Image (cartoon, rainbow, N blue to C red; front, side, top):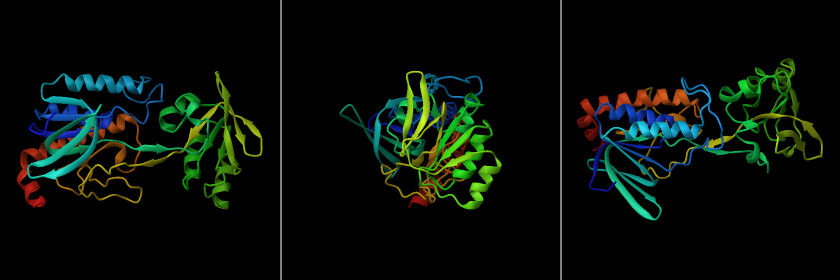
Length: 312
């Protein structure tokens, strides 16, 4: 990977969306550079679910298998590196990064952003110890395995009611903890009461448990509510300071794209969690990656002159 090498596409990020985009692009005979820092958001999760033929696989194993498939094509170059800058060039884009103290760079005609999001959790000291085993963030992914259990849902955001009702579809013993932060009006409380969901708006001190797993939620006043697991609502951040080209983003900071992944900047595409509506199941992200790969290939076939004219 040097600045003398020219690729058709640089895919930044090797989660399911980026891997799917890269795989479909190399199969379109495109020279693809796939760059990934190998710091996945779901690294703490032991098993991922809902991915056809791979239900229950470790997310890290799924990524490994995907990389091996992409690397099997001579058109692919897979590099582990941290991308710190992408800038516009006359013939496309310059991608700059670093790994283990060495500077790496390359040129690409088009760019696919598939870097995902960074999670920020409620400030509970022991949350990380239980995250991925007893506590999860994706209800669609992990609700089945928590069905019927006494669960907690810790949420500090305005969508607390809708998300709590979703969790409640897997259990009839749910306590929602707003931590004194999530806004909850009388209508929202009534919706939760009708669904049999308990609401506790007191500040939460921490989660409790031992080697066997999570055992409860401890409030700031000392009360401990027995709970065997639950869900947490993170806030998500799209860290895209490394992209020097201006991109349209929504109120959540997500990259605005059309249905095929095209951004507001000619030649730049985005796919996966970094695009609205945000975090999605792995199989959905992979599907979006394939859709965007088709758009990139079509644009390279018929729209390069248009892209250059738009930039100039």
